[in-house]
View 1 (cartoon, rainbow, N blue to C red):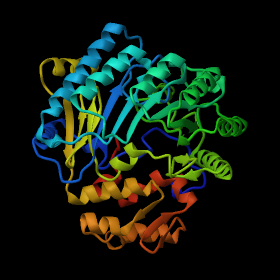
View 2: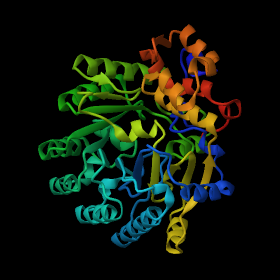
View 3: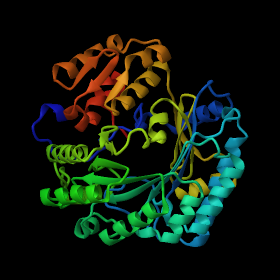
Length: 439
C-alpha cells in the first residue's frame, strides 16, 4: 500500500528521500571502469561544473544518520584525509572532462565540515583554489554543526569565500537533540546563529527535521516559532526517515520491530504543512518540497538547482558521489580503503552507473518535480521529449488525484503533493527500478 493510498502510514525502515536516479542499488563495482572512461571525454558544451567535498568527521554519530562519518579522530588523521582529498582533486584537474571549466558551485558536506579547525579549513581551501580557482563560483556552501564553531572560526570560514552557511539545527529542544544523538544543545544554536548573522554571511539556512524520536506536537510548534524568531534566509525541513544503516534501524532489528519509533508519515506531513504555512504568513516563499526562502530574488541554492538540471559534479572524499557526462560514480566507502587507493595513486572509485538518454530524462524530471513546478518546454528542448506523452499515465494519476495541474507550459504540484513528493516519484521510474531497493 503506497503513502498516497493510506490514511496513516507508519514509518518503517528504508530510504524515503529520492536524491538521484537510477537507484543507488543499481550502481556496481564492475562498472567502475565506466567512470574512468567518462573522465577522459570532454564535457558537453554549456555543462556546469560543481565540486563537493565530504568531511566525514563528527563529534557524535546521530542515531538517524546514514552518511559515512567517523568520530574520535585525531589531528594526524584529519591531515591525512585532507591530503588525500587534495590528491584526488589534483588527479581530476588533469582529466579531459574538466575542459578548462571552473566550478560554478562548491559544497562542503558531511559529516561535519565545521569539525575542522579554522586553520585546517583555510589551508584546505587555499590548496583547492590553487588547483581549481573559485573566482567563477556563484555559491560556496558549507554545512555547520552549531556546537563546533566559535566566532573566530566562523570569521575564518567566511573569509575563505563561503556564501551559504547551513546550520544543522534539527530541533531546539535539548532532550530531543540528546535522545536522537545530536552533539549540540539549544544554547549553542542561538550563539552560532547570532555570530554568523553578525559576521555577515550572505545566506544562512536552518535545517529542521520533523518527526524525530520522542518529538511531540507541542515541541514542533515551539521549533517553528523559534525559527521564525531567528528569521533565517532559508529554512529546510526534512521528514524523518530510517534508512537501513542508521542506529535507529539497528535497534529496531535487535528488538524485532518493524515500525520505527518516530512519528508516522501523516503526522510528519501535517507538521511540515503547518511549518510552511507559518513561514508563508511571515513572508517566506516555498522554493521546493523542503525549503522556504525569505527572498527568492536573493536566496538561491545553486548546488541543488544545477545538479537537478544535469550539472557535472566532482565528489571528493570517502563515499562521495560524482556525476560526469551521464556517468554516476561513488568513491570507496571504507575509510582505510579510500586512503590506500589514493596513496597508491589511483582514483578511489568504488562503483558506477552510466545512464542512457531515457534515464537522464527521468532523472531530471523526477528531481525537478521536487521543486513543485517544471517546464515542459525545457524537456522538449533538451531531450526532444513531450513529457505529457512520455509520462501520460503517471501524470494522469497526479491530475486525477488533485496533486498536479498544467498551467500552460508549466506542470505544477499542489501543496499536498509536495508534502509526499518522494513517494510519488517512483511512478515515473522505469519498471525495473520501481520496486527495487533504493540504496
